[in-house]
Amino acid sequence: MRFLLPIAILAFCTIFFSSSITKNQVAKNALVVVGDEVPTLPDSPYDYENDGFPEHLLMTNWGENDSTILDVVTNDGATLGRVLFYDEILSANENISCATCHKQERSFADDTRFSEGVNVDTRRNSMQLNDLGWTNRAGFFWDMSQHDLKDMVRLPLQDENEIGLTDLEGVINRMIATDYYPELFEKAFGSSTISMDRIQMALTQFISAMTTFNTKFDQVQRGDAFFTAAEETGFHIFEEACGMCHTDGQSFMLPIFNGNTNDALNSTPFLFANGLPIENNDIGAGEWSPEHEGLFKAPTLRNIEKTGPYMHDGRFENLEDVMKHYNEDAVEDGWGGVPAGGFQFGDEESDAIIAFLKTLSDDTFTTDVKFSNPFESGVVDVEKPNQELTTSVYPNPTNSWTAIYFENPSGRKAEIVVRNIQGQLIRKMSTNNSQLNIEVSQWGAGTYILTIKVGNLISEQKLSVN
Ligand code: HEC
Ligand code: HEC
Image (cartoon, rainbow, N blue to C red):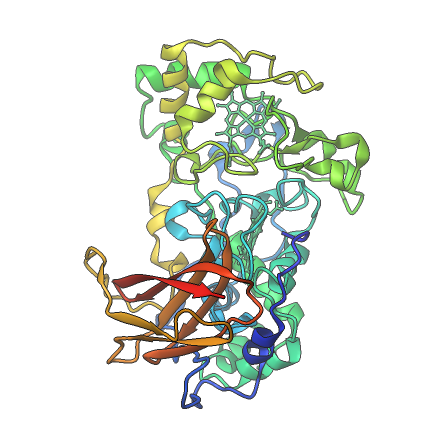
């Protein structure tokens, strides 16, 4: 993520970064429009406060777990964090939020191999965000190059391809102008002042409240449920073959790191190689520590059933593919944690491991309203199949600009995504109007695919640039 330079399409940037367009002031020919949404929040905040690390997980195979959560989570702080997490107003183009790549139903991972960023797809697979509060300082990102959760939530905010919050002052002014932020900051921090530091603290509190202690595994540990025979078998094989990296026997989070630690190398014991051949030139931790080339974070396996595709580059679509890797496809990686040629479990054992992994799923977490998008009304839409949107693009072919026209009588948010013929993301835009003019002179000759989506109406159009 940090390594991707955005494809700067200057003409566009000047339009999209322009702070002169406010949410109430929609230009006539509608180049950019911002959603006029206000979050719906409960009268008294949901309960996010942590009751401490659950007792049934306190004793781990690694000894007593004396982890402490980084920030004290308050209900008002986490509520503000929730709004920030879902609010597109923070992004340069006002069309992206943390939730664009971190989806609740996926335990806050993404359902695609790489996520669509502001300009290009991310370089690595988006990571799930459950249970991170308790692993603070162990290391974040696939290469564990970050060591403090509070520090690291700033990175996606400022990454030009993620949230792209490059103009902090402009964004803070936008936030002050909303009906909701001054009050939310006041409640969370005692005054309505908005600062990057407070934004980080609130996001960290929201993420720290994301725990998955309602899995079947937890119920078994508490004596409230029993494993099936397959799950039990899977658990034992797991402890022997996988547990040394995917610790810690009891909680399946990262080893809790209680040391002090800005010393980056302190966290290397938790970096591993698992027999994957290097692809896409991604050498993981080798990028910040040459002697750790090829090592990656072994992420928590809590909610793993929901977070596919898997591995740092999302190369495996499902858990069966992951098990095929550990079973037979692993290659010599020079670290010896997973034998070349895999563990050779056989089908029955592989299935048992998968059955066990599924006991680590917490459905209450992925459906809990307190982690859901406050900008979506509480009414759940019955899912309807996508229907065709009536659209036209003119002029087409073009070499300078074109206009996209579509039905949007009630002024809903229309999303327009442009990809080239190889499927690479070129541009993402949104408007609440029924027309969007776009400048294409910098795109290069070729065919582009425009996807226009308004609610559940969708249309795909080809655009030729000559
Ligand atoms: C464009 C997609 C995208 C957006 C937007 C995005 N992320 Fe991420 N996030 C990623 C990817 C990809 C990774 C893995 C990056 C890597 O390892 O290099 C990641 C990793 C993380 C991690 C590390 C998790 C771990 O286990 O180490 C955290 C925490 C995180 N993101 C929080 C956020 C927050 C908070 C926001 C909003 C301020 C956000 N992200 C916005 C794609 C995104
Ligand atoms: C030597 C350490 C090691 C061992 C042993 C190991 N893993 Fe892993 N595992 C890792 C690392 C490191 C990653 C991330 C690798 C990457 O993305 O490049 C990983 C990734 C995974 C993932 C994907 C995680 C995600 O969020 O995409 C799953 C699932 C998984 N391992 C399951 C298992 C199972 C099941 C076993 C035992 C059969 C096992 N692992 C054994 C180190 C290990």
